[in-house]
Every structure is written in C-alpha cells, then in structure tokens.
Length: 417
Image (cartoon, rainbow, N blue to C red; front, side, top):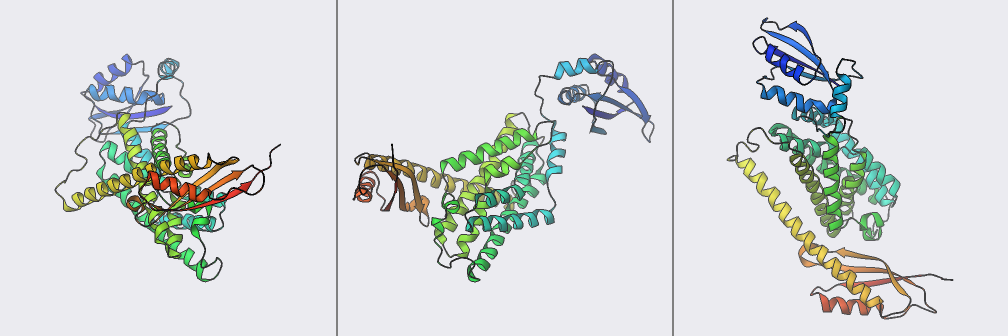
C-alpha cells in the first residue's frame, strides 16, 4: 500500500474530490498551506493503482506542486478491499517520479562505489589466479557496477540528463578503477613470486572463457540488463545480486588487469573488448525495456546536441558499438566454422568425441582471426588414441577458412562397460 499526499488549490479542490470519489478512493482533508490558498488531501492506494489515479488527476488539471508518496503497512478504509480487488491482477509499473526516486536510492556515493569496485577487483584477481569459481562469484556479489548502469537507463528513459551523465561517468570511472586495482595487485603477486612469472594465462579456465567476446556473452549481458530494468519498475525491492553474477563484469575487468600485469596484450585486448560489449549491452537492454514499458523523456534528452562534448561522446559510443559488433559477428561465425570442422574430423575416427573446443585469439582478433584452437576429446577405443587428428582438423579448417591457426588436441581416456 502507498499513502499519497497532495496539495490542492482551493479552486481545484472540488474537482479533485469528485474524481477521487468516482474512483472509490477514500480520502481525508488535512491542513492548509502557508499561504492559505491550498489544502492537503491524503488517501491510501494499492501500489498498482498509483499510476492510474495520478494519471487521472493530471488529466483533470491537477498541478503536481506538492506530491508525496510513502509506503504503509496496511490501510483500512471503506473501499480498501474494492480497490485491492480492482488492481490486484494488473501489472502497473512505477510512475516516472517513483522510478527516478528508486534509481537515485540505488546509486551509491563516489567514495563507497570506488572502494567497493577496487576491493571486488582484488577479490576477482585472487580468484582468477587461483582458478577458484567460488572466490570469483564472491567478487561479483560485492561489485556495485550494475546500480549506475540502471540509473543511466532510467535517466535515458525519463529524460533526466543529469542522472544519465552522472551514471555514465560513474560506470566509466568504476571500470577504470577496477582494472587499475587488478593490475596493481597482479603486479605485486607476480613480482613477489606468489605466482609464476611465466604463467600461461590462457591455461587458466576462468580467464580462458573471457579472452574474447562471444554471442553467448552478448546474450547474457542483454538478458541481464533487461531483467534488471524489469525488476526496477516493480513495487518491491530490486535484488541485483543475480544480475551482477550473470553479467560477470568484475571478473572480466580483473582478467584485463592480470593480462596487463603479465604483459599479454592478446588477452588484455580480448577481455577489454568483452567488458565494453557487456556493459553496453546491459545499458542498452535496460533502456529498451524501460521504453517498452512506456517510459518516455518529457523533453529533449540530448538537449545541447551542438555541444562538442556531446557530439564526441556520441561518436565514440557509436564507434565502440560498431567495432565491437563487427568483431563479435566475425568471431561467432568463425567459432561455428571451427566447431563444424572439429566434429567432421573426429567423425572419421572411431571412439573420439569432442568435449570442449577452445579458440584463443590474437591481437586485433576481431579482424585477424584466432591463433590457436585447442580441442579436448574423449577416447573410448582400444589402445592408444589415433594419430594425425590435429592435422585432420587443421586441414579441414584450411578448406573452410582463410585463416592460419595452430591446432592442439588433448585426449582423455574413458572406460565403458
């Protein structure tokens, strides 16, 4: 339930009262304003009735000079049950003013946000270097990066340029802070010999899965942003833990920092592109869901389009989206071809079946292609695994693509009965 308090001019009081009565809304009249020309009217409403009633008041000419909406545990009025039954099955998203207030409440202050981003990056770095999924998940729970992403989407959907700009800056600074924090910690770990200086980062499973953007990563980011936006528009509290874990932004930022510390530009560039694509997907998906639910900017969102800063920011965003999208399409197409070639090559040998196929990319991999294809295959035949499997896969890749790659095959023995 919500308790609504509005300040109505004496000239509009009768019209507002008649409207509330026609909607079966029970109200009481409180005190007067300081100037003595307005009266306070308050009434309880089911949460799903807020948008309908306030919209009707706006159509009746009520000017929202003073409107307060607060949460109450329960309300007992003559028509309370009637209103509850009327709006019980309707999904009525938050009004723009409620959505703005909820988004602002979720936005952290700069100090706590940056501290949490750096600490979560430390945890993610430790989890990646120890290859511990539990530690990596813990870092995602702590990171508050999704909150400003949702605030930016709300700002775009309702036309709050100040909220949009502040949230975008918060995301950018937070990502940079997490990468810098992860790089510093990784450098300390590397040069104090807590980890091997010549560690093969691609061999670490949790880093290997983040070395380049993929279609599945884009789907996860898009779905996570859409789910977060839909949850934000509901009347209850919004839990972002699942979104943070699904998006997996902090582990990707930590992987970038680790790659920088180990001097591996291949992994650094790949993970950074994945990070940028994911966070853009979250922002765009959340904004699209809010627009789909009917939220619209009241005025011009861009405003000063002639501003040099605005034009440069838009051009940079479009460039990143286009380049990242082109790279993702190229990689997804090539990975599909690789999987088909591997399946065809293994089908010629009895007892072989692919378990995993990993494609490791090189610098500017979106346009130059992968460097190494690693296949883990199960072998259930008699004796030693067949020879020449890697050569067969490489031959098929040469037939289907124009990219030169190295093929590695590792066998796992299984006994069947």
